[in-house]
Image 1 (cartoon, rainbow, N blue to C red):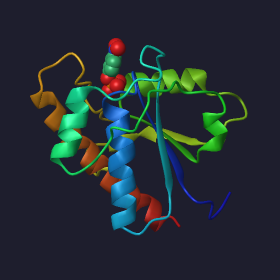
Image 2 (image 1 turned 180 degrees about the vertical axis):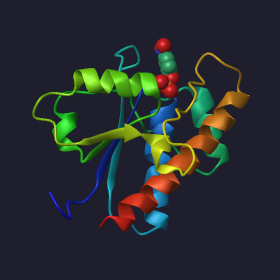
Image 3 (image 1 turned 90 degrees about the vertical axis):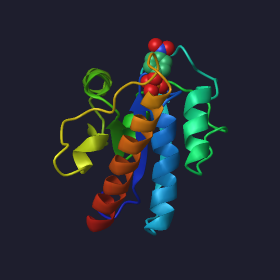
Image 4 (image 1 turned 90 degrees about the horizontal axis):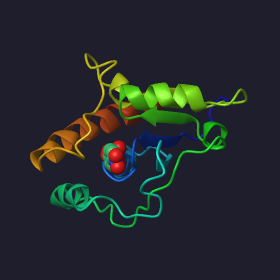
Length: 158
Ligand code: 4NP
């Protein structure tokens, strides 16, 4: 639908590290760039449904002035593919899983977060869950680049 307000769902594996960060940073960036848009996040898996984000993700967010403490994990649903205009995967495995889950009546555009960043098309945001704390800084930096570029792209196409 032309001129539909963008509604973006960010999806990672667990919905406790990367996608809650993407949701919150996208919201902040949309407000900064004056784009009227909605954002939410979900996971491919159901392991962390109802849980708050990983404390390390909350800490890196707080350090950069973003609060993700109110997010609660949820699993992606078939309805998400028509409720949202864009379903954005944080990495390539997640994108592949979304392509398998996508129902026939899906209307949302699928893509990778870093597709919006010139020169980083096709790249994923590394999963920091099993790594050291400094991985979360890299995650935050990639999420910030991706969401800022995505807001710009969505603003241009409106
Ligand atoms: P996320 O990180 O996908 O960025 O939320 C993960 C969180 C949990 C698991 C994997 C990745 N897990 O296997 O439980």
